[in-house]
Image (cartoon, rainbow, N blue to C red; front, side, top):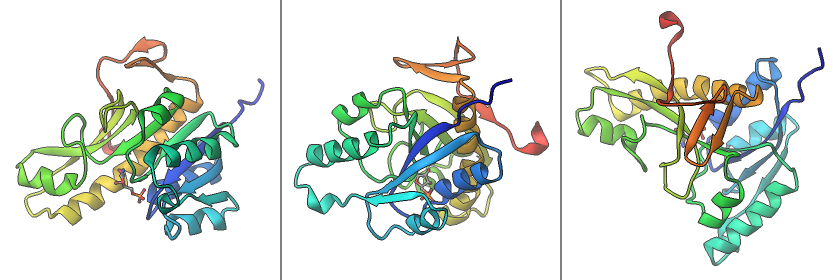
Length: 221
Ligand code: GRF
């Protein structure tokens, strides 16, 4: 059988880059049929850049301070990404709101990971908000990006329990562990051609997805 061409990714980060690391580690260990063509950061000192550099990946930083208008930044970013003609653009802790023009350009090949069970708790500081709200469950979601902030069609989620003595930090750490599994799994499905987006609809094996796929912990599978 012919070898499947690996899915080419451009990953966008702004900071720590632990999701990027999970993706690179999955590729290096042969668990993910993908290649990272470039990592682009909105922050020139993002610690995530170091790991990419040590993996011999092209790294680029695009500093918002160099662009007075958001649209100028987004156009420069779009041009930079397109140099690599990626199959998929992966937002992994990229801390910028993207313009409609950018989102439309990459529609259906732009995904994001968000630390909540969307549509609950969009925006920042989700772990603190979840605890303040007394929610009984929490987790992470991977979704296609649309113009609506954290509002694009959700592909899959991983849930985590909330423990009685959880702080925002302990909860964040438990969610992050699941984010790493979840992001690798979703990119794997996309690499296999099992997931695609048509308008606001996610198709899984060509069937409209009624609910986000749930990623269970190994003990539950
Ligand atoms: C993650 O919690 C992700 O869900 C959110 O930003 C954080 C990035 O973490 N969008 P890292 O940089 O991947 O470690």
